[in-house]
Length: 109
Image (cartoon, rainbow, N blue to C red; front, side, top):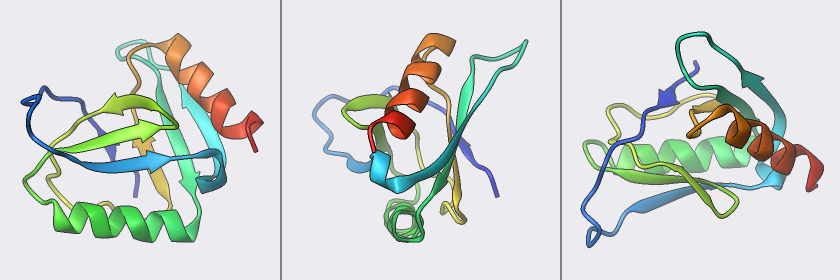
C-alpha cells in the first residue's frame, strides 16, 4: 500500500520522531509527475527500513513525525495510520527537489 505523507506545520519546540531514508534503505525510486500536484517519490524500502517505519508510525499515532531523505526534511506529517508495506511515498516541495532526492537515493550507494 502506498501512503503519501502530506506536510504540515509544527511547533518548533516539539521534539519529533524521525524517519530518515538513506541510499542503503532504498531499492528502487520512482519520481511521479502530476499535472495537479508537485512531483512525488515512490520509494521501495528494504525490509528492515519498512519494519522500522511501521514501528515509528505505530508509536506515534496522532503525533507528528519528521520525514527526511538523507539530511533533507521532506515533511512533518501527523501520523493518521501506521505505515505498512515496502512502498513509501513522499511529496517534496517541488519537482526539482524530487528529482534531486531520487538521484541521491540511487546514485549514492
